[in-house]
Image 1 (cartoon, chains in turn red, orange, cyan, green):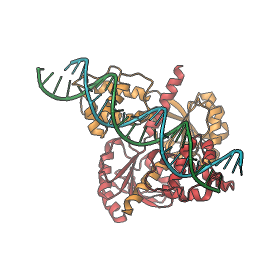
Image 2 (cartoon, rainbow over the protein chains, first blue to last red):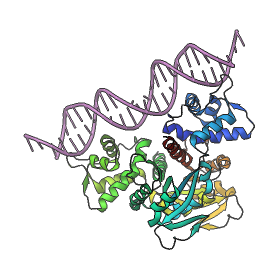
Image 3 (cartoon, rainbow over the protein chains, first blue to last red):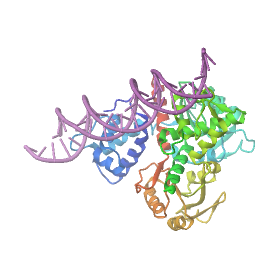
Image 4 (cartoon, rainbow over the protein chains, first blue to last red):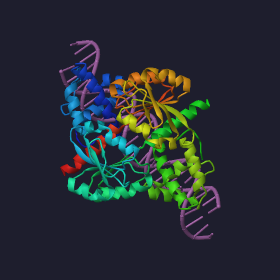
Length: 213
Length: 213
DNA sequence: TAGATTGTTAATCGATTAACAATC
DNA sequence: TAGATTGTTAATCGATTAACAATC
């Protein structure tokens, strides 16, 4: 029953799937839904879903009936911060960075990329979508002036730490790191590593095992 | 000492960071390295690193000396499948899909995107980088004819299941799903969900907590 | 009422961390 | 030898799953 604090990282990873599931139920006009039903749809353990729901739901569910879809959805989106916009900058306007900047989909989750930075002369001064690309030298100043809270790192591994330091100096509170490298950040800053290399490795490993048999 | 099978998912997620760390050590000309040293650099537990190394290293380490950097690197890259190319197709050539196709970085990890698919008429027939975009109707046939092993899904949530089914029908063995939705796949197929919404939610949540105090 | 579903307490499981003997 | 580091066995921790009483 919405104890605010304690949602485990694992639970946070399941939340987006609940949201998606609840939205599609809402679209079908379903008014209430029970944990076992959602668990069945998502192939998850029933108790797990119940606990996850309990962790975000303000008013709780009702025995025999379940949870009101719309209300649970709202509570969950709030817990996930989907509606609280966080200003961000992205550093490294290479192909991945370019992609992420032009992908507007993150806005739905509260990420608003205000500016991009790069060191490459021919990128500086250009505009991606509606996002301007500035000289990387100005990262810290820009972040301070605009109260930027999140830095997205899409530079090569060997430049990531330097960029990270500049972002920290600029006062960002969270860093979303796409470089496959370890970053050293002060304890107060949340580092979220997006580990695509690991995902690929897990896939690759599975295929190898499979094709050996 | 390289028991092949049992590398946990969590361990797999740490591997890319080891690889990056070992590469940079190798570049500095370092010949051997011990688990405690790497643990210190990566801010990980020493025993954990030792166990992870033991899981991939063929010849094992030597007391007081540690592991030969080059050899361990080779063993690890092999365990991760970095050098075993897997052919893939990507479905959904929207902005995220476009980004991933044009990002050549995944080739290093063994993912070779051979073709992209979309339903949008004005995208079909175009070329992204060197990758052609075909009509989504032909997914299954293409995969079968070309022995495609991995399908990458970057379509909106409500189209993902349909696309997934076509990929499965085409005989892919692994699916890398970027849509924030649950997919139903046969047990034999490995589904790897790339959960960017969750990453953002975790960041967002942290910022909110922090700014309340 | 009977039965489904909730919330919660207890048991299980897997991964991390600690302890320690073996080795170079 | 002494001390660092390995590999391994045992203890701890956290998350998942099972069990069950309370509720509608």
